[in-house]
Image (cartoon, rainbow, N blue to C red; front, side, top):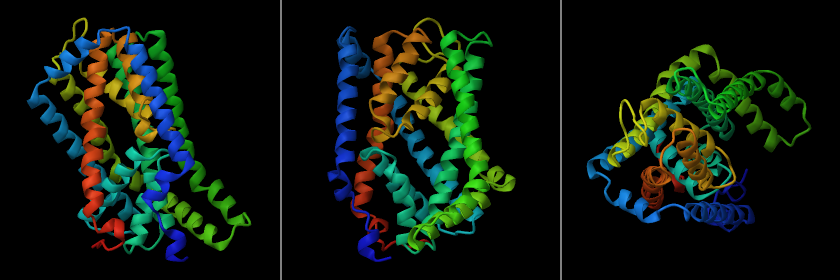
Length: 342
């Protein structure tokens, strides 16, 4: 396939109608959230944000960086499971570039961009790269769903309110979906793809993707990356907890208006699920509205506190990635196809 056909121009993507629509949808959601927030005391929100502890925010940023590094190492481990060997630096840098694309473009374009970068920089197969990314996403979905359901059970000591019970059932349904994706990819979908009358250019990457999914989703392969996955989502919750502590909203045994460890874990994991909605970059607008709703309706947090917490948390996470990712994109040899995987 020619270089012209496989080019992956961020500039071209930004000009596409689907991307423009994604940004417009994001803007509409954010305007809706701000209008809803107009019934709250926004001066109090600003005061809360202004009073945030610098030390707590620095800790949240450190956790954000640690999470990204660990994600890169986990992807490297997944690649090794399917017999693709790259260096730690290459895995982390390519993953960081793909995550940056995910926060500036909708529809999880960055996931395909990661596999494309792997191929462009000397990797053997675009399809096998895609397979490892799909496997990673399925494992994340299963882990987040199960941990989210368990944290909700702990947060309410087993006596789940109706809304939490519904979210718990949805979480288990999502875990089941993730498991079904892996099971179907291992057998029926792989066999079906070989029977479809597809052009060789499309059929070969598809077959390689299913091969990688089948090899990576063995019991041994999943167990190799399970510790990474659990720590990654623990760090996601730790970041939210650090931001809450910076705002003075975190208590181990929380009183009214505060959140504790299990509530932090539940909210962080629910936010992660909402961020998978592909309509907007990084779930912008969707995550904020949903998370504020959970904090207010389920954990009885004052709206001003909930808004301040989610705005600072998202700024720490997405804001730092947008700035750092843009700088990396400007200087990285990998996005030019000149990086070394060794």
